[in-house]
Length: 94
View 1 (cartoon, one colour):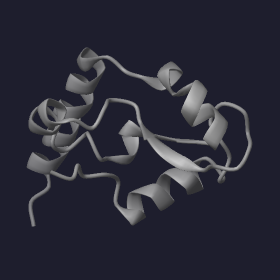
View 2 (tube, one colour):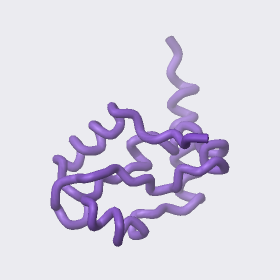
View 3 (cartoon, rainbow, N blue to C red):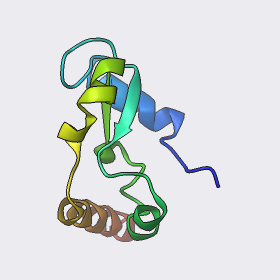
View 4 (cartoon, rainbow, N blue to C red):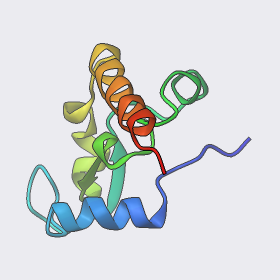
């Protein structure tokens, strides 16, 4: 099964927020890295957070290969983000 990734709009948001520069070394962004891994258990537990801009960081190729681990977050942090996004979703009524 193919795993979901960031939407083109989310990728663009992250890149714009970082002015198209790697978060670590300021080279041009090559890819968007998930701070919390995009795997089946995390997709089930963090449906709103996992592919949100808050879980992404733009990195150059070298930093993505060698330094991505520096941007990992804990499940406790992910819990806070997921709860926040759920509250926002529940508060919005149209």
